Amino acid sequence: MKKVIYPGTFDPVTFGHIDIIKRSVELFDRVIVTVAKNPGKTSLFSVEERVDMLKESLKEYDRVEVDSFNGLVVEHAREVGAVGIIRGLRAVSDFEYEFQMALMNRKLDGELTTIFLMPHEKFTYLNSTIVRNLAQFQGDVSDFVPEIVVKKLAERFVKK
Image (tube, rainbow, N blue to C red; front, side, top):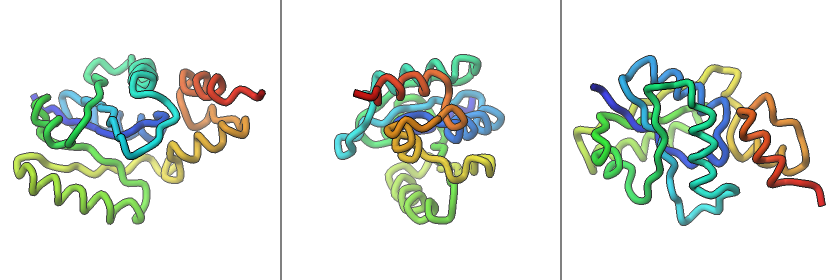
């Protein structure tokens, strides 16, 4: 069974993330979407909230599981028996950072492969920061994120 991980902060999950997950499921037997606990980053949602939103958003995919990790991606990949790490590339600007990370991960574990996937072009401009900023000013985010995320963003940014 070929298993991969798709790590990220998913703060929040977007349709761009889900598109990458759909593409991954077509290529691999099992996809583990794993929420990174990043102490250097201030997140809008807790790890538990992000895991819950992902589980709800991905419940139709029986070969996808959702978890979280703290530490190095390569260590987590080893723990779950993954053969690769999925990374999404939206634009050329993503490539330099992702390329450097892929080379570092290869240095740490030469058996682990980084697989770059591009989302559908309608999602190339989309990222979690844009969604959070739009929601903060009560903009309609329903074209960009699953319904559970629309609801959670509305709760978080209630007008006072």
